[in-house]
Image (tube, rainbow, N blue to C red; front, side, top):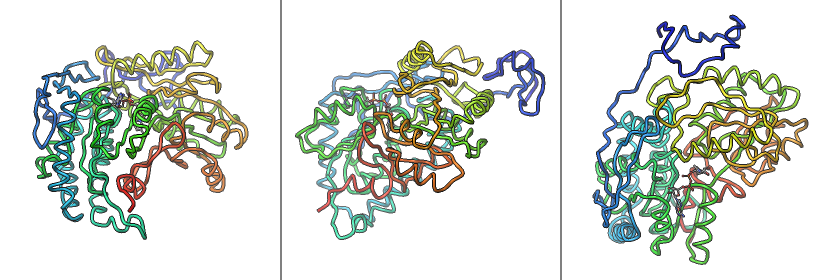
Length: 507
Ligand code: NAD
């Protein structure tokens, strides 16, 4: 830390709050004290271009199509990616089919498990490099990719490695078998972790894979292919094709895919379901969310503030289960708003690679435009906006942490998934009203409950229509615990025994 009167601060209190003078609660040093930049310096080893990963080889798209991948933190190009068309996707499925028939389906579970263990360990060996690549490519703060994304991805491979030779215990009294070939498409918010959520259970269950990462965040998927090569995974067992929606549609609709798994927006999920209706393909859909984080007056408020901040600002709010609707009991609403504003002032927005950054870059220009548009709608519809006074970097896509008070259930910001660092605050008086408001959404992915009373937690959890309910915490994940939605948040589970069963046929 050093003193500086001139250096721009990533995040500062307003002039007004500073002029109130020092108080016991506001230890904020304004212009006087500023962190030195602390960039993570590990080399992410990103190649200047990547081909499609088919049959253990990186090769260009057949028609030679390419597209750039840029860093949202500074808008610089990171690499060129190959644009796969339907013929490339077909080649990936042929490789997967050959691998399944000739090698993978013949391997006993303990041998498959060895590959998963190797992948997990190699990922751990290269954790720092993967974390830097993930933050550069997706914009998330390095402390999150380093402490959450990469270790949790490795944990998924370890967990499923353990299952590979124990599938007989997956469904007592029933035998299970792999589907054969699965097609998978994932979004951009947790590129490596979503990849691990998809690939690890599919391989443990004995399937071969064709997977498409999101067009803005494909780099760690392609780096993971290097890990597959290093681990000696047989050619064709996992194939990675890059591209946008058309490539994704080709992956989902290919006749060789007996099962498809999609994570992304509800709108695209519905389109895929419509196009696959009647094909007999087994589907799982992990879609959008608009979670309620419910705080009762008897909750430990200090802890709740941390949970609310983490619930909405983790990964810039690009989280399907983000606690984007805060339901706070009316008696503590003013106090909670004051506490949240104070806590927000110490959030540092800026360079994703800086170890002090709390909120990094918005993943793409399109997403920034969508967030800005929804925030404008909130103001226009009469909600009250508070944004922390912070100076955003001049290059890159950034949005200040934002909270809306005086939100009603009809406001767009209370109904639509913003997928950004924007919290909408509503109030309630009774537990019944909290449940009614929390469930008043088309989604049903997650929820949070903050209260001192265990019985109230159990009652709320049983009445909230959400796949995951956290109590006195938020955003806790473990490979052994299933995750998935109700209603328009999708169907099927990822993680745990339930997630693995979604990659197996019951005989
Ligand atoms: P998106 O639906 O736009 O894209 C997701 C993926 O689908 C991308 O790889 C994209 O290229 C591909 N795609 C686009 N059109 C397609 C089509 N017609 N056919 C097949 N594939 C197609 O979503 P996004 O903006 O990348 O991700 C954000 C969304 O993902 C949010 O709604 C979020 O809630 C959701 N999400 C859900 C979960 C969950 O577990 N429920 C997890 C992460 C993200």
